[in-house]
Image: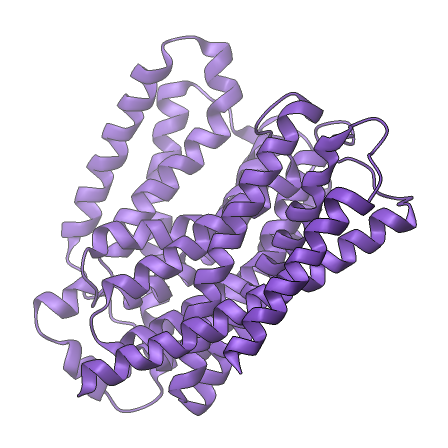
Length: 216
Length: 211
């Protein structure tokens, strides 16, 4: 099952790569740099998806106490942090030629950065607790707090940046996206989602084996 | 549970810490009045947050040091009562510290609070409530964990970003003599944050105290 998923993800990623580099047209103003979007947007989407899954799995764990829910939360948080990191890195590389800077305290950048630190703390907490069951409970609580905090962070950061500065034009506009670019983006979205599911499934299996090995 | 069992130990230490912090701020920024005025709201809340982190981190240590943790777990009745009790305790403690820090700020940095005071009080109350609500929850969580002094702020600070931004921005506007209505959106955000943190704290505290 996991193996099939892995091959599917690999296949989708390959198609996504071809779409992104060969089929999607070169963007007029930004040139080839714009192709980073096919990595940047899907990873950001996966990161948010992953943290949403952490929330659901955390609630499920506290309600049902199923170990599998905890493993899903754990795996999803790990994958989410990695993808958030990739999003930030890719965004930086994209930002340098287009905005002229690696980093700016734009609302969206800031909230993603806070998200990154928050879930790094989540993983840190997990690592610091030796007792399995307690780690699961504490992390479930933290997973819920962190996820509910996301909208608050979003609004506060948004107001913080926009009330005292003219509306930022830093975000490359994607209002009118040509169909070829949009298709390539959607294919990559699907591909990265598959990759996410595969990684989480793999990691959940690994965590399960870890527990079993420790128990025996 | 509402009995404040904390000896004056924490309060005294926190006050001296806050005083030392004021000196550090002063040294770090130099005597330039203009610059000080510009960063004052941030400094003020930095002082509150830093002393709050130190104080809150200790909330559940009293139990640990005196081996009362089990007693706390065995206590009959709703666990959320413990949460509310601890929350009230740290809320009051923080308010006392903040009031004194604020007075010291006025004294040392020569700020004229004047008409901004009622609004500022509201902002401080809302901000401190949110801070204490998450802080108490996380303090209970990290009390039983390795490297807790380190982990507590690491977990707490990113989650508190909305509260910090809201309070700093509102304070800044109020010190510039803007009417309270102008910062209404920040106050709403603070209220929303308080409600969310309190609700989550009440609902999840049971799970933390289980073992």
